[in-house]
Length: 217
Ligand code: E4P
Image (cartoon, rainbow, N blue to C red; front, side):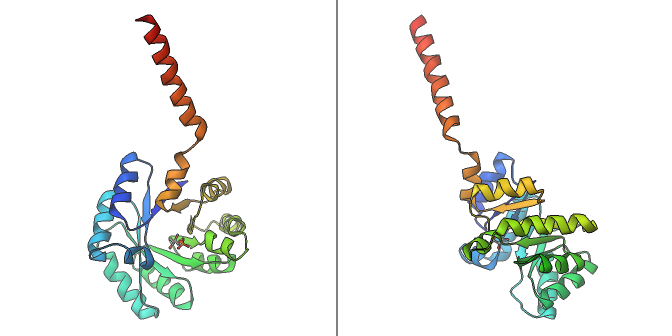
């Protein structure tokens, strides 16, 4: 399963890409609004660092506007993937942009029916928001299971990009279900590294070594 970073923060992207475990980045208007500087320049810099798919979201809400904005964002860097919100306009814009060879991530997906329509429009990625579903007492990961099953049934090439990830168990469950990608905020990536027994184990190895070597001197 691929791991994407869900942020517009250059420092975080540099930190986790340097480790070698990040395959791409997703941004959205809320995330980009937190960062100082020109969003185009930030997007360009992210592409240079990650050298993988970088989702940049359109702000337009009509078909023509989404297509226009999508074409423009796609000129920033070949790694840019155009993120369009799900809806009639988003699905139509997805179909049009895909016909031009521009990769599209259909976002704000909350049902298997929506994911089916995104795949029919040729979406490169579909982004179901698991955390926001959990927030309204609906099992977000159950939606991932349904989408993976439907895409497998028909051989859709659209990749399932698990979004709105809030904790490491979302990531583990996504991997067990065979989702293609999980996009995680930096704290979730950080939590994937952690296990208290690893820390205790390293500490004990070093203490045992020091005790034995100290005794020999
Ligand atoms: C990424 O593609 C999504 O925009 C993001 O994961 C949404 O996360 P949130 O629900 O925590 O805002």
